[in-house]
Figure 1 (cartoon, rainbow, N blue to C red):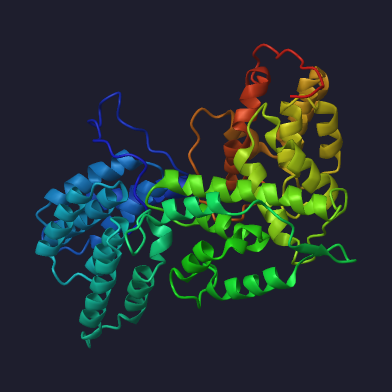
Figure 2 (cartoon, one colour; figure 1 turned 90 degrees about the horizontal axis):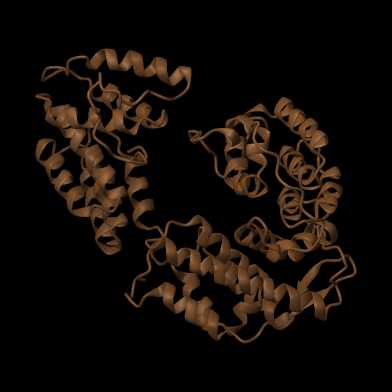
Length: 475
């Protein structure tokens, strides 16, 4: 099933002024035009248009046309074609489940089952809906029943679907919901454990090669953690819980704190507010531990090169802390940012230079921001855009406009997306983006639009009144 649309609204009549204009790139528009021609009048029973209808729904969603998708979906649910009607109810179930409307989702699922009880798509649909509702045990049971049912069909090979069902149903239950497998509110228990951890203490040594190394006790704990880590595919689901809750030394390990912070940012959680609370708690603990460890080792002014694996958890924790807590005009993250980019990791493997440039400019340190931007990689278009804000903050409007023109020439997609009122989110691949691509432009807008607005730079760049220069001083 495809991802659900961002919103579900009934489409107005085609001749209405409120009728939505179809968005998307030219390829998507051509595909939609070809597919729509197949459904000018919905096909009669017995006509196999199911794959085309499925593709048309997916293409509507890829083209960010959810109202057209919903209008077409409503028509499918009412068509005389049994196959298309079943497809419509299957997709309706997925849409409702993704929005947490589970009574409606199950009503749609039962109607889809009544219309086409042998459809293989029902297997994934039922398991994913149960998982979304937090009914993990039922999901595992149903996955097993569906696997046996599919395996008993000698006419078709459902081995891939069976493997997918088991993979979905075995997903770590402790990550996905605020109610753990023992129904004792796992996330609340973890937050309580973090609050009860002893104050940060240094359990690290600094070797001659500037590599952090845990002391023997912490090293043994981290070796045990590697066997149960949520990033270890061979670990039993939820195996990390007992160690995190039971080992008081867990809060002294950059490795464990970094694993947990990353997991909470990546994993789907039933209550997003709980995920944010946990992420915040792990990052705050990591930053507090950083201060104690560096001070104890007298390493505040020493580099910690990325090439040493023992340094990487600390550098990653610092980067995530800075990204999580950064805000225009707020100097909270300046100290860890300056440390990471200027001292510990000047080669910037964690990619913090552009954030440092924007934060410095936003907090009245524009001269320092320009110096940091001047050392950026030639491909670092984000830092170049931050340089525009720094020049503007210094009141150097001519230089700022020249720098903006260079950015617009070198990275036209970034400026186009940044200045747009409501740009469409492009297809994204987590963790990577294409230099000069629409995905890069989207990431820049998400990260730094607030900084441009805070500086008054968008109005200035589009011909509005120039912002008043700020003093180059502390926030």
